[in-house]
Image (cartoon, rainbow over all chains, first blue to last red; front, side, top):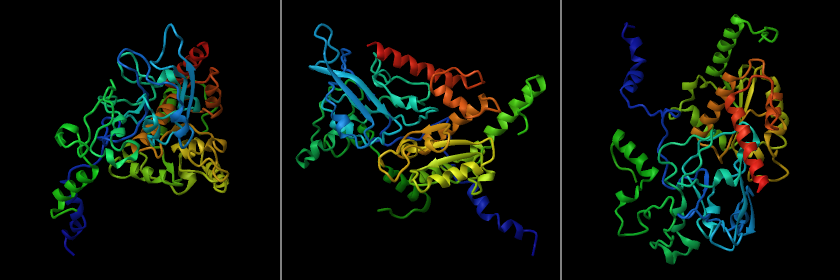
Length: 227
Length: 195
């Protein structure tokens, strides 16, 4: 038993010291969110300020946890709130029920409701969790309202989930590779994902898959092939 | 703590700061993973998010050594008495985070087998939304709780939280952030009623 034997036990420790740190220092920085991430909803407007929601209640009907409450009302003829016949008079989402499945976004006929990338929020009482139309509707610049109990970072309001609709409208395989999303969404317009449109460069569409990222990490460390 | 009878002179006021700092800087959670949210809770404790940065890496299996109960997952009716017993066995001061929609409201399990909101059983301090909440959302909830601990009175009881959620001003020291939250919410509500 020599003196150096005690150090043998630290071999792994010393080896790991040189390894890169994996910890994300959350309150200071956030990890990159995947392109299809579902966060807090926003209610969008047209560029002239009119609300997109027409109060059809399809989102409330499709919601599997019944977290959305919508009431439609006829537009006042002299000052219409939305371009259609009706508008969403009451719009509430209970975030203590919402599971962020994005079915409301798929169901919406006017692309009124989309989901942002902001998922870091918590409540100290139940009333805060019920977001009303005042809190969900984007402001005059088309940006979501940032509430004091939410943690917004740069760029998160830009990347909404609306373009998910372009993936498979109505689940019809005939539409594969065809972007049927109107593209007139003033807020959160993005080019299609790679594979949807052959003319688009993958680098242009900000496409990455977590699987590829993980595979590249493994390759860098251990070499070999990852399938 | 035995500090309840102390009045606020210079010494005890500084002592209060130290106690609050100590409480929020080393808050040990009890192991209470019930469902898939527990996977995210473990992930938050593991290397990628590393709750040890907040002095919380030890998930105590014994409730007597824990300060915080993170109810991670849906609570079935059979689990409810167990949960209450674990909460009762924890030493004061103690806090509860309701993690995920199932613990908060029952979520997608709107049926007879699941408790529709864990706040029917224990007083909840912070709710983390999401199904499940990501590690960052859980850490956000934990930081909100830290702020609550740091700004609250050291002898705070949970009745204050009940008072505040009804919009009634509490005379006890509470987080200014929390008061702001309530006032914004009531403002929105009154505006909507006016429409």
